[in-house]
Length: 182
Image (cartoon, rainbow, N blue to C red):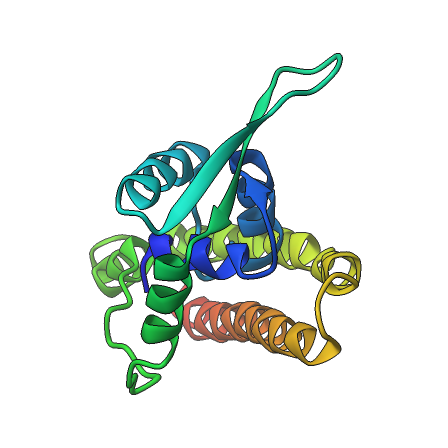
């Protein structure tokens, strides 16, 4: 998946500004596809230059003007081409510097590894709290689409919650194994 296809996907729901897209990524896809504001705006320029989207300036009272983007026929065609691509659903392209550190942590005292794992748990728990806001975002944005479309959003949110819970359980099991070494 590319950032471009994520942007095209959001634009299938309707016109959006760069700011709207940044909010949409942050409140829905952030768990599995983090997109920085600067990257979104850069990609918008590329998509517009490629003829996949069109931007128009919307004049606003009391606020700076904003640029709103919509899909062109070419953009819609590209999005549905990408969506229909055969995909195995499994990717081995998972990279984690944290797991690499765990792999090599046999070189440090177990207490240091336990502290690192405890920090990992705290980060996962904080992220679970953030994810707890996702159902409200789905309810809010789901009002503007067919209900079956929001079902797919709920499924990805469920994956995020399940993955974080798995990570917490895994780290706790690792800590228990290391504590016997102390």
